[in-house]
Length: 249
Image (cartoon, rainbow, N blue to C red; front, side):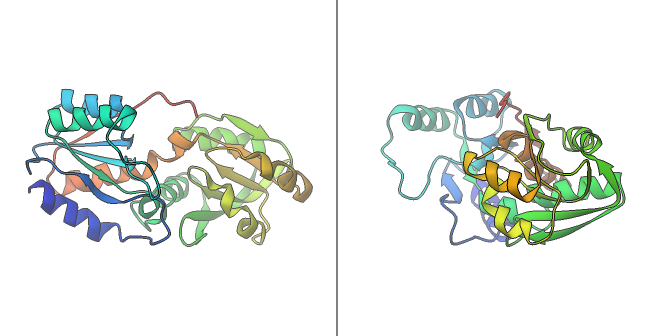
């Protein structure tokens, strides 16, 4: 499989979402070779450097280099990253909202799958598939829920706004910067909203509606779909490596 064939396969696997701010797809071409694939959350200099060190010539990321309305002149940080990609003949493929929303190989789908394997619960998509409403068969004390989320999602708690009831029966989960879905989530009578990062404008809404805010890190919650994709690509016979970064946010 060459780089263009793999890119086309990913294009079909993750259909585009028109309102996405990311310019998804193959953002940087290489010579076409794909002997090993690397996955990382961000197209950072470290991720590119590590892909090169581990002999990968195709790098798949959630946060790519090109966004709508962005200055795309190849200078500064962007130029530094592009030079490294070209130097090591690494193709770069980005997928943003399609990975948030994918019904099987997405961040939110993977979070729900892990939780359903661990405890009796049901998960229903909301926010156009970019989030899940999780209903627990047996309600949990909020501290027990936080410990469960930390363990099952491998995402340590960054912040807890303790506004909700002592026991949680239903909560919303949205990866990354998910508080844009708060209004819709509240219509489901949730006890907690779980996402990656906090937003000041949501503090009083959560407080006045009696809903916990549980924040596990933008980076940590957006590893999940990539790890699911890694398993999927390995089943297709590809050699795949995961690049971890230390991002406490």
